[in-house]
Length: 342
Length: 276
Image 1 (tube, each protein chain N blue to C red):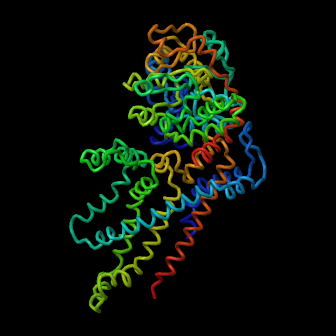
Image 2 (cartoon, rainbow over the protein chains, first blue to last red; image 1 turned 180 degrees about the horizontal axis):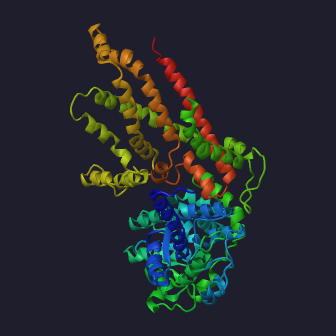
Image 3 (cartoon, each protein chain N blue to C red; image 1 turned 90 degrees about the horizontal axis):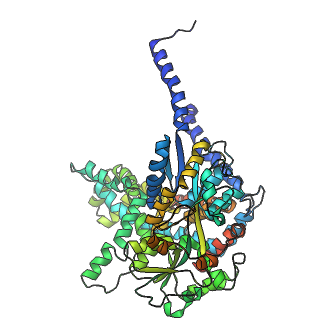
């Protein structure tokens, strides 16, 4: 006969009470791996509180920079259960995750708002939440004649006035490749142009935010960064403009996906759907300058003129070959570190 | 006796030795851009790390910074530790706690403070320009000097406390006896205190050297994009280049070099100042 003491009864009851509570917590909770800062705040405002909370789903933001988030997503892909229900990454990183079969397929069945996504942005395993393009951003007080071509960044009269973010080494290399006669599938000409930049005393800045500080102090007059960033910095008082050069620019989309080993896939897909709602998209446009990816999120005409791209500009945007970028990533990084910066 | 170290030993095996063995296995794999990592048994990653002039320079920079920081820390910490250990005042325990105060602040937060101090618009440059001593900001941030100064600030408490504990064990009467026999203060220090404090110097130096060799946040935040040490290089290979095998090889090279230097340094210092 089991001797049941009072202590044992209370302990057993407490133990048993954990199970339904934890199951309930999992079903009504979604862990979203995302950037922090303004992005995380807008996600909290426009998606977590505005859409997910009324659905009874609590959102926990797992905030980190994209590098450890991508590494964690790829490292966890062979685990039975992952740590994220939704992973937010830039398009290139999302491609790597897709290639390694780390993500669930998205469809109108699990994400109905996918029907409204612009066709040129659609992917098989992720949704595009916001997009912009890496362009030439320049100080309008110091550069009175706006640049027209990528080659203006190599103009000797701007010696020491071009700054490049170390974090955007792939984008910077792509610009150098096109300027050197290459393309999105031929980065070899980038090496010569990068070394030319070095001979023109180009400044390498530790982060994208450091580029803002350098533009503000006029240490640099040009940088290559997302037009959306340029918009945000202009809003903060730095006199900036951006151009899509006649040779083109590097488009960038920020995407979200549900990992295959997510603990709560159903809530994860609801989160993706919420990110594609017009109101959520418009919040990112007005505060961060990123263009909505859905066709039914109209913008104020003044804002649209500042952040969107004309048909002609959109036609000039390059079409990155992410497969090529993936095969070249290590080599591009090595050249950037060892030869260009070394 | 073995049963007392069994729990700690099991924990170390599970959480340290096992992951390191897995990492060693990864370091023998082959990197493939499409698949990220392919199972193999190859030494190509080690050969590349050892033979590549760039990574030789990174290792040399790391060793240089670690040795400089260790030497500076000993020079700065010894007088402070001696004074603290000989203190008779009621403030001794409070000052000991204040010595540990820098450890209460995280490395990233501390580095942010250094950026505010050393930046072009930082306190030092603003003061120098405001007083007319300079007309343009000095480049203080994103230099090896900034990294060394910041790392010394982090590891100094470790050295002070280690040395203090050892110097407190040196009887004051030994110094007084040497002085009575005609030895000048510098001679007392060189011939009596320093040899007796050698175990503390060795222990503190080993601890500080290991911490400096593995410094990550400070070189990344204060060294700038062109300054590379081994720990950030390992991180970059894992996260930015997705080259896990090569990153693992770099990590093990860092481990082996740190271990070798630690053993050689301990033996050399210990032999030089071995007491009779």
